Amino acid sequence: MTLHVLPGPDGPNPWPPGPPHPCDPIAWFRSGTNQPGEIQGLASVGCDVGVCATRLSALGEAALVQLRDEPEQPWVFVDSGAFTEKRTGKEPNWERVLGLYERLAPVLRSRLYLVVPDKVGDQDATIERLQRYAPRLLQLRNDYLVRLLVPMQKGPHSWRTYVGAVLDTLGDGDWIPALPCKAAAFTAADVEQFMLDVHPRQVHLLGKGRRSRDVRAYLDALLAWRPEPVHLYCPACQVTMDSCWLAANAQRARYLGRWTGARDKARLELGPAATKPEVDRLAARYAWPTMVTLPELQALETERARTGATDCLGVYASCRPTYSVGRSMEVSLP
Image 1: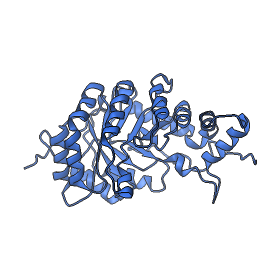
Image 2: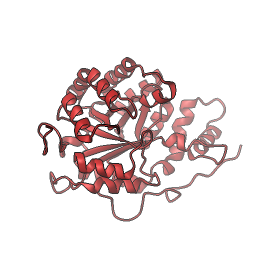
Image 3: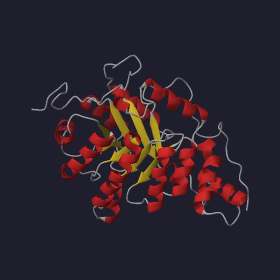
Image 4: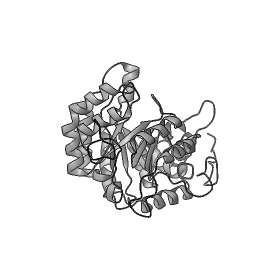
């Protein structure tokens, strides 16, 4: 077996140079980390974790529960798995998804970001599913302060109508518009128009990572509308994002992915008797310089401190979301 030397902190894909962007994320979730060793390894090196509800095993769920005592206090993103419906034609088992949400919420509380039931690319079906499960979702939000991510589907209805329907269902409280950037994707121009129409104080970019090639165009688009500052240190929209870092770096055919190389090195050190979780935990430490650089960690900590999100009591502690449509908003629906 060849021992591959991994790039260091100054290797490929560094945090973009120059001054911080006004919309630098307060959290970048490495989604698709559904195995217990991956979850534990990423959390141990300070990465926010992302999983898929329909692909998470019982052991993976147990690893998430153990993050309650993780010194790094990682935030956790759980995708509902709605994206699988386009491929299989079958609606996800929402009872299973909501059951997972209800088991994790009492443990992770405000560190937990949950994608609500939706249908990719279908506004009407998304609103119907949201209305169907709203009582359970609202209970999670009210009892445990979890973050509800509501996908903003493109379709025949205007944003005034669509966001108004969400407001009628979930109220004017703490839910976050989630902009799809992978399936039925928003372009940067779509993001700009959404900001001008809706005026959110916080958004989540679904499927967009901090190192995506076009991420700066999306962050620039978020500046199309700036809220009146709640205080001096909250000059722009707050942003979270998720991307499948592991899947993007688990290559071997065309080139050696960073995660694959890290696992090769960990397996070589631990020997043939090592279990997959043991290999994954050590691989996360070997891959750490390519998963998150010191400037990235510093930027995330700076952004969380700037927006008042460091206490894990909520991004909303200093900057509650408001919208330009809805009952208590700047422009009322007819």
